[in-house]
Amino acid sequence: MRGGCKPAELSPGKTRNVTNTTGSEGQELVKRVWTELQRATVDRHHEWRTPVLATTGLDGLPHARTVVLRSAEAQTQQLVFFTDRRSPKVAELQTVPAAAFVFWSKRLSWQLRVRVSTRVHTAGTLVDAAWARVSQSAAASDYLTPHPPGSPLHQPDADNPLAHHLAVVTAQVEHLDWLELARDGHRRARLTPDAAEWLVP
Ligand SMILES: Cc1cc2nc3c(=O)[nH]c(=O)nc-3n(C[C@H](O)[C@H](O)[C@H](O)COP(=O)(O)O)c2cc1C
Image 1: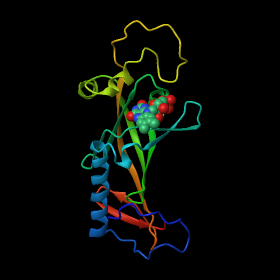
Image 2: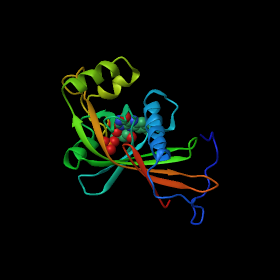
Image 3: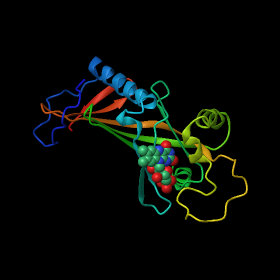
């Protein structure tokens, strides 16, 4: 694994000559990618901890924002993030569950684009377990604001200031596109749960 190398510019003609096969190299790559995703959920400094999440807005336009990756499980092919259930992205995902994450790591020189199908959980054991965890942390206040994220400041406070608004969003991976920038040739692959299909970068 490269450490801190400067990513080379992506240009035609810098493509390494790789074959379109799914061998042990592909399996190893899938494993490494999921290992990095999992690490990002526990390492505050991991660059993949804060991916960009893109959704389709209620206006039909693209909307994107940063979120914190809370869980990544290779076995279930699932990513998880937390949000405020009153935030615009929740209504967006409840209307169009398809979304995409983009991860970039300079250390790895890896970009990961993940198309997902999401499900928003606003009550139940998943949310209770998440709140038990979040309520012990500084992030708790993010989910206790009297007014929804994005609403104008300086409004009268709502009735129950102690009620939390945490929602858990589970995202089922449907398509995983990995790109590595390297001086001696870029590499790109579509990753399935146990194989890689090499693509032209
Ligand atoms: C580093 C960083 C991490 C963030 N993590 C989250 C998160 O985990 N969940 C979340 O709802 N918003 C998070 N935000 C805020 C969102 O980017 C966004 O501003 C907010 O959720 C409102 O988004 P929306 O209007 O599209 O719903 C984060 C912002 C930054 C800069």
